Length: 147
Image (cartoon, rainbow, N blue to C red):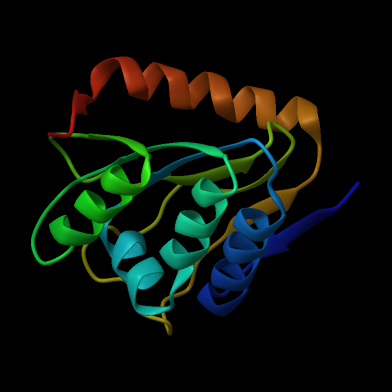
């Protein structure tokens, strides 16, 4: 079982991409728009599209704002179920196949850059993934369908 504290965005991006590349059936994520921006710039959502082309199911929650609204629309067209929150989230989570996850309790939602310090937890513990999924589902019920 992998357990590691991640303290930089480069590693967060590499791990997030790897989770999307190796997931077989489901991916769920909650991300502030600054993380969505980084995912767009670093091609991580391209991995998401490939995952869905392989038959995977994806649900995501974010604060949708320009200029990334088009990327969200592309993910929806590719088959993702995306919802949005009325406030930009300060937490981040990405869970693949209900077992591998990376999450952060607090990410500065407005001014995130590759130099920004972070603290995230990466693990392949299915119990932790289930705990994160419970938090995701609670946010899902409060979010609004993207159309």
